Image (tube, rainbow, N blue to C red; front, side, top):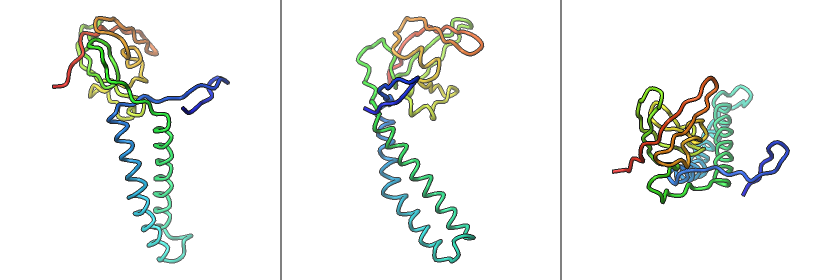
Amino acid sequence: MAKTKKNGKTENAEMKLTQDAFDSLQTELNNRITVLRKEIADEIAAARELGDLSENHAYQVAMEKKEMNENRILEIEDILAIAVIAKENRSDNQVSIGEKVEIQNLENKEKRTVVLVGTEETKAANPLEGKISIDSPIGKALYNAKVGDTVEIVLPNRKMQYKILKLVKAA
């Protein structure tokens, strides 16, 4: 388990992911190492053959691609090193990562269905599509709550309350 420093204290770092997100990262990592590295190396070799590297735009672009690819490889390796697969929910009434949950805003009585996504999936989170990150205020409030619970979401300028109506099972 990786350790991080926070407020002067050393603590274990972990990143919760769904199995799908973990598998997707492994696939991306494998592709970047086995396919993209070779393609970029070929681009660099071809650009070198064009002559003077100091004014060679193709070479500069290829080197930037190489740097971006290597940085992403390191990022994925770091994520996978601290990844914890969110356990499949064994409860029929507790909200966990990957779960679709129907909630109701207690202020305006509006109902909506959302799915909780893990930390790395935060980039893919899109509240308009119903994808809520567990790192967001609403995700933090919903995570591990139970059907029937009322949760309070603290936003910068107000507080909201949602009632958890039900878990929506996949068909």
